[in-house]
Amino acid sequence: MAILVAMTQWLTLSRAAHILGISRVTLQKRIREGDLPSFDGMVDAEDLQRAWPQLDLDASGSFEKTRAIREDAFAKRLRERVLPSQEALAQRLFAQGQELAELQRTLTRYHRLVEDLRARLASLPRPLAAELGRILDEGLARAISVPAPQEDLRALDAMLRVMSAHVTVKPSGHEFFVEGSETLLKAALRAGLSPNYGCGNGNCGLCKARVVSGEARAVVPSDYHFSEAEKAQNHVLMCTCTAHSSDLVIEVLEAGLPEDIPEQRIVTKVRAVDVLGEDMMRLHLQTPRSNRLRFLAGQRVTLGLSAGVASSDDLHAELPVASCPCDDRNLIFHVRRSTSADSQVEAAGDFTACLFAGLIKPGAEVSAWGPWGRFVLQRESTRPLVFVAIDQGFAPINSLIEHAIAVDAAESITLYWAATQAGGQYLPNQCRAWAAALDEFSYRPLDLAGLEAALAADSTLAGSDVYLAGPAALLAPAEAALRATGLPAAQLHVEAV
Ligand code: FES
Image (cartoon, rainbow, N blue to C red; front, side, top):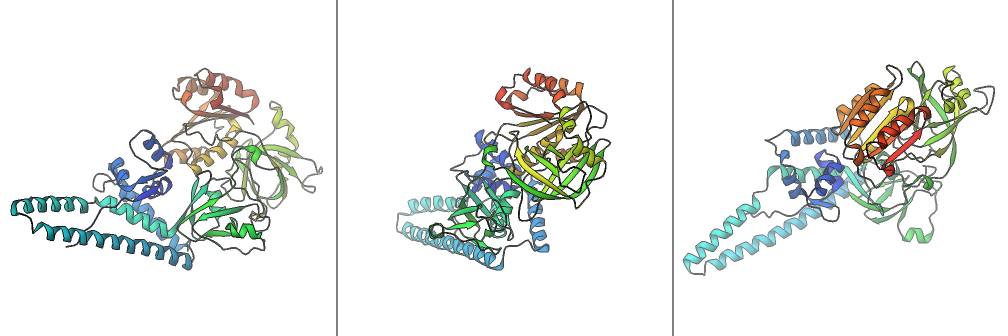
């Protein structure tokens, strides 16, 4: 008689969210509300199934959808060869084979135990033996009736563990996934983390991490020399190593506050200059492969034109970075044409004048130094996020939103974008795309008068973290409207752009 025993399968929150195609924050919310038990940052697949009954294949299509997404991702990885090395695949399959073998040994032991019990029952008086036999059969029937979706959860998890390595960062507890043979640094940045790093190509040693458990292997050559003590403690370079085992735990220094990031000065190249509107341009810079700019989402940098682009070699502007640090080597800026009404724009007038005059062309060198400012996400907060942008104040807000989405920072995101001129929301499609793609994202384009009324009517603000950015002269009324809602001062973050 074949006997199956339902066994607990623990999943990390990230892995569970990854499998189900839901946000990690949504999972955390259900745990906080008491709907889903968790132990030490893990959840049981069975509890997950109970908390998400809609995952039932017949009741809704959500599980099918999740499976289709995963299968598509799997096929895409195969097509694009975004796969771990053959050696890593072999090791991960071997590890899974060992787990399966262990499981099989356990099942065999249970099987023998049940057979032994059944044999002993035969020696008992008949009515008692029949009753105990019935109890045993019913118990076994319950144990093997594992719901199909839960079995699917296990199958998906097994597949993901082979394809994508799961990395846990100590002491922060942050987690990320490594796809194919990408480096730990690239995967961590893509996930919105802020590990310490410098050159990005194995020379400076700033991205050192200590492997606590699992295995990391070099995929990029490097001449960096570790000390004997570092070798003994399993130090690796995040920019040259990938995860070899399915699960890797590393100890890393992460930047959490603006003061954790050193001032840097690098030379970038203009990749593109696009017109976003009558008075708005998008400047796309790219950092050198070997010298990226570390910054936190929402921070500013100073851009300077090198001699040759303009007659003066001291044309500079301090601008918020509109892209996310997770956007690899790309730095995006939204630049407004200078007007006499805005002193900050006026101070950068020569730089922006050069941009609008077409003097800053693709291929030109632009120096960038910084980062500056404290308009960054409060890392430990899980409150809903409300972003309020006025005109070009959307630039740092864009960076914060991309970052918040990358790190799954909040259970809901609301964006108010007020413009002083009709059509002043210069990237409307992008905002609509966020709202269409993310269940918990809402977007409200407004004029200034509409903004004050909308904020006054929003009863959720007092329980949210609110980020307000815009031209200095236009911030006061919005700030007053926000404070009037009872929003605590510590939850309001304001940036003049
Ligand atoms: S960032 Fe310089 S060695 Fe990794």
